[in-house]
Length: 298
Length: 162
Image (cartoon, rainbow over all chains, first blue to last red; front, side, top):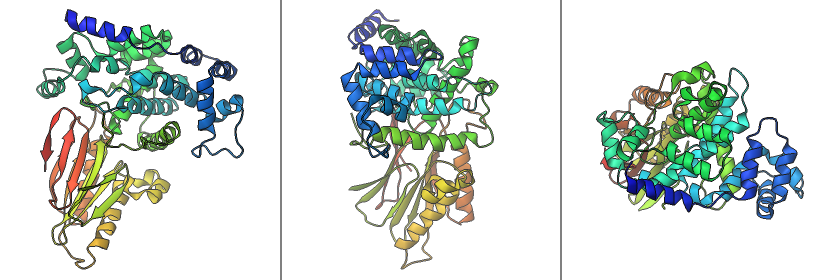
């Protein structure tokens, strides 16, 4: 990799704000198999802003509780753990999720929408696993898998046209191959450096590392990472991509060893994911209409 | 110009020359645009899936979501505008239906959508005069009513008109 690019990426990551202690701890606990919801509630209780946000959302018209929810215990139980993790990350890593991905010609919040849709799909895909997997963990992995794009994007401006032409001419296998050949790195590698900077749990780092190469993941994590891989693919197919890279990645058919998505299941889960995504987006940000694909520019 | 923005499964039609039907970020979804030169009316539907049998309740709530319910719903909408000329000529253009590299039969939702829409258009005797479909790009489609042309944009690619 070019020294100048290397320095720029390292500097960009160094100045990226750390996750708040409560968000870090939340990710750590939620990634631990067999954890208890009480542990999640205890973390949230220690963060006034997050508590207020979760209470606001649980009482919103989208969730419409029969009686007002006044306690954080009830709010977390009512919304469910994945909602809480999603709300916390949306709030705690807004700078990354909201970046406009100029290098991919993406718009503001495209990264958030892509990762949220991927997360929802990954969780639903997990239901079709041949052996049970941690669906909530697939969700969290989906929310984080492409964080490297936020950093790499600012350093690969005006490259989209060359990459697209190169893929069409078979000079590059896919968008990630083009990133490697042109810049000596890719959004996965950069994402791992950011994950290290944020001290994300190793399990989440493995999801980031292998979300395009699930067959290379450790065997015990492979099903989980295939769920995120499929979620990523379905998110792009639903139009929630991150810009010029569009759907220019390979689908690894090895998912068939872990999931049965045949016979119309894929279509059914696309409908379910679309409904859940709209609900999530409306509840988090009711003002800007991001539940629909809009013309919001950066 | 007045933009009429359609989300997933939504449909709309207009014969106002200063309006523009638009839909964003089509991945495997397909925008079907029907133009009626006799009445200068244009309609668009943003179709997500080919067959409503998978979820009839969704089809009842949002017919434009599926090709087999969306196309008839769009034609009914167009008929409301074409009341004075019920037998007006119509033609169609479509855009979208992308898929991942190496997609298999299960994940090929985009090409399945395109195939189904073409069958339905043929059955309705509506000629398909242009298409920008398939490949691995997402598309934003804009259809100014006055021209009957589709302007298609994709990140990193030049604007195209069909």
